Length: 130
Image 1 (cartoon, rainbow, N blue to C red):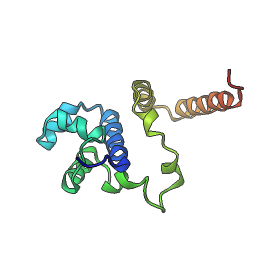
Image 2 (image 1 turned 90 degrees about the vertical axis):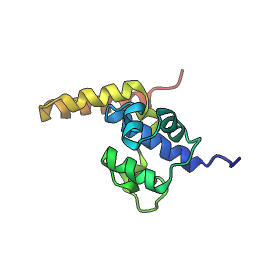
Image 3 (image 1 turned 120 degrees about the vertical axis):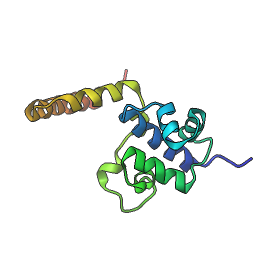
């Protein structure tokens, strides 16, 4: 049996994050890939390696460039991509937050909400640990 590669787990996290962001179930993604939801689960938790061809198909379905799955390993990635917390993005609360935010149509309201969130996050960082 092969040793688990941390890169497989990272790619799986990115697949899961995008799938959840798109509101897609493992079954739905599996159906589009013509595989079982269990296989999607194995890809997402990194226990099975995703082949290059299948990863290309996943990228097409989730509407991202295939390089999205590898950006954590490249040297020339944008600074913003370096700061994405994929563990956080997999939580149900974060998905709800992103979906709700994306439904706000007024740009000014979105900007105020963003400023409020950044202010709260800054305050949290300033507080001493209890």
